[in-house]
Length: 240
Image (tube, rainbow, N blue to C red; front, top):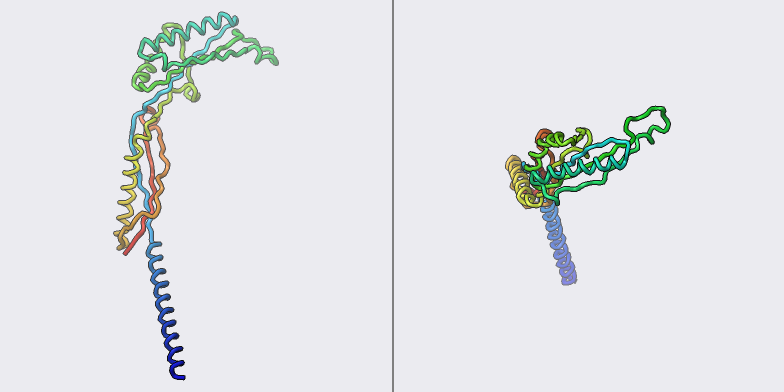
């Protein structure tokens, strides 16, 4: 009888020890989990000023007339004058695009009115330069008044985005790695200062978000100078 009681007592002791160890393991696991759940989120900024490497320059002009045939001859003459001006100043044929003229019958627009117009037809024309030689095109934009001596008037409207010179930076992939590295380093420095202030140590990275790159004009007066910016978000573990 005593042997049986001893046997049960031994099994109960083993079970108790097992439950104690299991509880200890669970507790330890909870403690570790809570420690691992301690994190700090830091943002790192990286900015770089770059020069545009692509420019689009639309040279728009208009012609008026009453005879479509004569009007097209005038358009061809003006287009030829513009192209000769561009090529003489270093723009290649591959960088020049000529769009078909858009002819408007102004008299048709007055079909419900008694008003008359001096010229029945108006032609909107454009010769576009797309080049990677930004400095050259910029110098020619300031010289376009020379076309007036040849009888061609370039028209433009500051509120018309299709008549404005636009500058682009297309080398983002070349500077991405360096900028991401700088942004990540700045984020780590921020997180490190936080860890030191909270009497903690910075652990491994939990998650990292590269962020979106933005390319904007540095200011409205120098649209060929671009400001590239990225903000990286990094979450670090904290440990005692």
